[in-house]
Image (cartoon, rainbow, N blue to C red):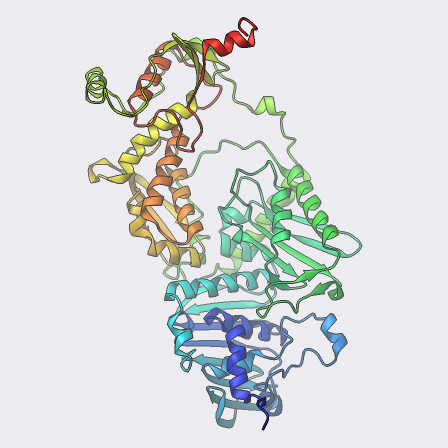
Length: 627
């Protein structure tokens, strides 16, 4: 008797579900994409417990009759392709015909659908049909998936927390909303509306709803075309950056995909315009002949293979670079509004307490889009010619101008003389390398201090030196946030984030308190700060808070020890004197005295050297005085 047999259909469906249905967001993805393929103009997603309890997707698409509804649960049942040639001209989001069969095999699945003439109700448990009856329903489809993975406990066990699973779904819905602005999309979790778009086709509305009005105003439209591809979309000005590449959304013929080579082309277009490890917000649409694109690469269809890829990459990079070059301008030192991020508009996007639905009033949204469009056109039509580099550098004052301005304005390591003596007495035999006794000679280019000793001289990087001093000061302060060292704000700082980011921040609030960021929830996805430590760098408190929050959002986990370290390094860098800052002799001597008192005076927190030694022998050898 042969050993090979045909696998039972229910078993094969469950195996296929292992690839297609990874988590609740995978179910939402398949059902929403089916709704879009059915030409829906309105899609509503209702989740309970992030989809672990129930997922309901309701659309107004073409629906199915009874025969098609029964066929849809068979493997490889699809209306998208019929023959082999269709596989190379795919324009729909789905095409394999595995989704419904796979989802139904690992859940309790209810389907109610109608093509406008008659409706049918089907109920399946673990892929087995339990109930089949006619039903009255408007044209469209209503699918409910309950108790996902109820018959595969191993898969259920390894799902993440509700917040994590919900974050994956929100991320997908945000991208679908960006990719299909003509579809009205509504996402509701446990009765709370997280996102709602009106489906009017205005991309800027969706950008404002997801990234905030303030950022949407700084998104510039771009467009490019060659013989094979057309690209268009929106890209942020260089002043708007993020710590992750996750804010680059790419759609190829309507399909959201991950494409690391295209991401690199985008970042290359911003080369020299962005700080290291910072990335722009970009929404990129790519359109081309479907025969140039292979979407049958990955089970989740997140990856594609592109023909003539080098030509596309060059088009993207050249178009974006030219767009940025046309609108780049010298950053204006605008007064930071404490930050009023348009509370009447932006905060209502995510705050159900302000409005019954998490969306803007229709009239206000129309005004917003019109204003954004006008502002964008004014920027594009009247580009600001950037000044030459030497004109942008802040003009430094003469050497004497700093005589009455101490470089250390707050009590940072104000070490008294007797404390220096005590250190020297306690550590005469310490293995720690002694700090040289230096005599200040002068300063070079307002950047390096020159100091001499018996055997040669030293060049000291004044920024690196003070960065080390302040790092050890802030490291101690961040480690013990004292309630007596807090400053109350007359006007609280307000911050708004996307819904998935807000979930991450809510889980990390206690860790952020460890570094002096005292967040309070202010609606669904907004936060306020009413006080911060007095030792935060003066005038840069808001920027420090934003960067600390960005670090938490970037890592998606909170290592308190690393967060404290990063906070100390970041604040020390911001508050240290910069290049082209001339000091008088008293200031230089004070800097060297403070440097001598720190634990490690030889490297800055980033590992760069603070001072470099040139021996007398080396100097004489350069001048050919010795052989």
